[in-house]
Amino acid sequence: MERTFVILKPDAVQRGLVGEIVARFERRGLKIVGMKFMAVSEELARRHYAVHQGKPFFSGLIQYITSGPVVAMVLEGTDAIQVVRRTIGATRPAEAEPGTIRGDLGLEIGRNLVHGSDGPETAAFEIDLWFGDDLVAWSRATDPWIFE
Ligand code: IDP
Ligand code: MG
Image (cartoon, rainbow, N blue to C red; front, side, top):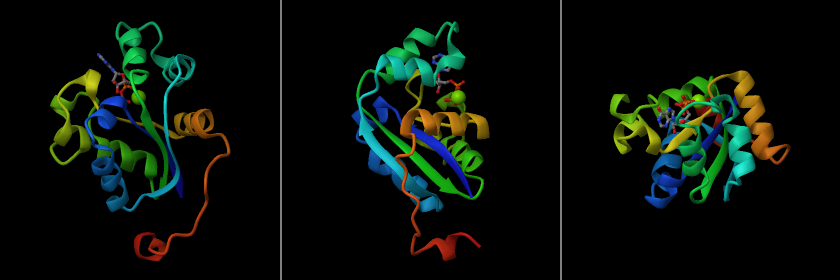
């Protein structure tokens, strides 16, 4: 079983899309093991997006992610990292497939609604950065009908 880290970015919260987006992950079968509604400090934003430091969009990205509250989540499931990335869709919403979150709900790269970890090392780093040990391992009643 794999875990991955997700952010519903400030535009998702401001547009009232939290329920819509969480519902897509739930329906997919992913299990919520961490979730919090929070303001993002500039320090946390810079650490989270450290790999993008120096790129032309970096300061705009920090401004975007700190511009309002977010919902941070840890999701668990079979191949959760890849499944979440594919459920979210391409970074550029205009290129994201219809049926994906970005492909159904977004238009611009700087307002692309959701973050999902891009690999096992990133997921481990991001889960630790945002949640530490503040996760809930639980047995879900539907697990046997979702996980074989
Ligand atoms: P990802 O979120 O699909 O993993 P990354 O390439 O890791 O995409 O970029 C992180 C975030 O930075 C994107 O989700 C987007 O919000 C923002 N971003 C990336 N490239 C650009 C750009 O060219 N212009 C504006 N924002 C960008
Ligand atoms: Mg990324």
